Image (tube, rainbow, N blue to C red; front, side, top):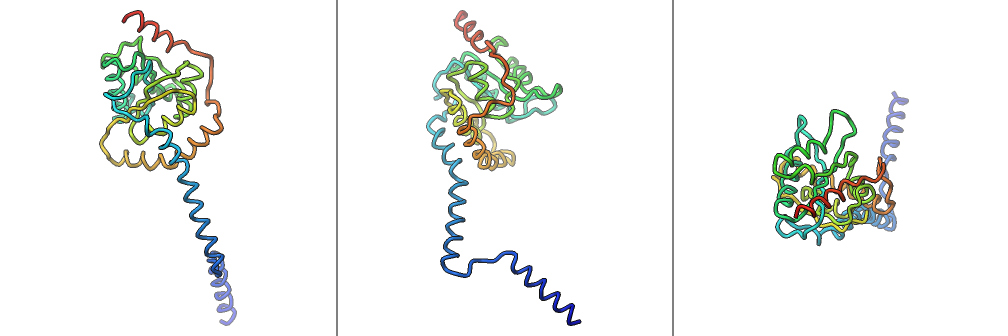
Amino acid sequence: MGGMAGRAGAAGKAGRSGLRLPRTRRGRRRAVWAVVAGCVLALLPVTWVYAAAEPRVRDVRSVPEAPVAMVFGAGLWEGRPSPYLAHRLDAAAELYRTGKVRVVLVTGDNSRAEYDEPDAMRAYLTERGVPDGRIVSDFAGFDTWDSCTRAVRIFGVRKAVLVSQGFHIRRALALCGAAGIDAHGVGVDAVHDVTWYAGGAREVFASGKAALDALVRPGPQFLGPHEPGVQQALQDAARTR
């Protein structure tokens, strides 16, 4: 009985010793400052994203003209653009119809044969009056940084209007700016449902990777050769003016 009590007492002490709070005033002060420093470091990427992008966020009517609109993929539902992606494409179609842009670059994931965001985006745009010859597809836009750096290095884009949801557009602007694109962004209005709030929460964590990508500037997952599609589409648009 005494042995069991001794073992129980030892286990209790071991459990209590797993996490010890500082006993001295100096120790507690250091712990508080460590927590504060951690919070500041966590918020730095978010602050950078907003500082870099906020002055360049517009709506469809007020955004400056640019040669190209870039639309980022946002998922497919049974082969068709998800509601969020459809909102982005609707905005891009309006930009084209109103003469704000002359070419639309659709950038998304086609890593599997059965999943083709760019082709679905192209089909949606043509159904809404954007000529097929004014749409260029990037099939390796696996994430925002890849889309931005490929737009520059593969397609030669230097100035663009970016189109995405409001919770994502600032990160897209910050990353495309770091990649070398003079960009403004259209933040598409959407219903603030569970998906919207989840996307907003995700951006807090995604900002850390974005800051690292902007600092290190890694190559995209797939680089490939230069593609003249954007320049050819712009030349065709100039001839038909």
